[in-house]
Amino acid sequence: MTRQRRHLLRDIFDLQDRMNRVFEESLRDTGLSRMPGHCNPPIDVFEDDDALYIRAELPGVRREDIVLDFSEGVVTISGKKPYTHDNQNESYHMIERQYGSFRRSLSVSHLVDSKAVRARMEAGVLEIVLPKLHDGRVRRVPIIEK
Image (cartoon, rainbow, N blue to C red; front, side, top):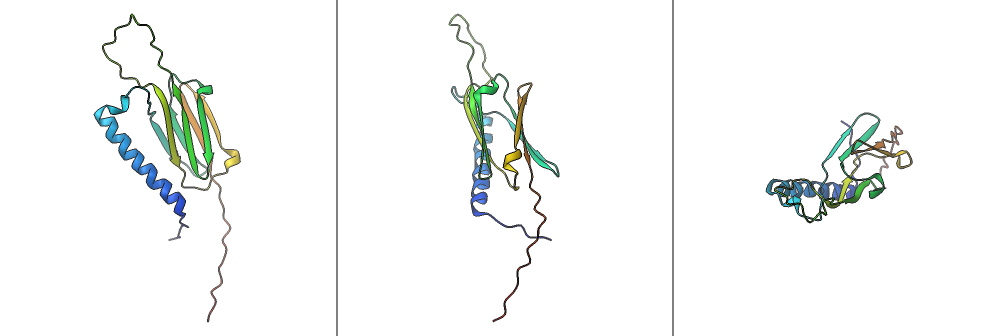
């Protein structure tokens, strides 16, 4: 079994991401995540041998209203989903769709070729492709005897 090198900062971001998911799931269960002014788009994260993929459902959000950042192993998707029902004559019986600003940050556990990261929007789904760096070089460390 090979040992993976641990990165303290990455471990902290992973813990933060897990805690965010716990809170998001608890809010989702009580309906509090539907508070006006905040939107929490659902996200899928998966990988294959070549890349890590993130898909975020963003129906009703224009491409130019989304900001995508990648820095130090963290992907951040932020933006705003506008509330489109401004007619005062409308009387709603139910509002389940979420509106408002959103921000999701995800830690990436693999080394990523940051210059090759790409994203596309299709049918209200943002797909981010983060190509993995395959560093096959192994450095043998000499052991010094005292």
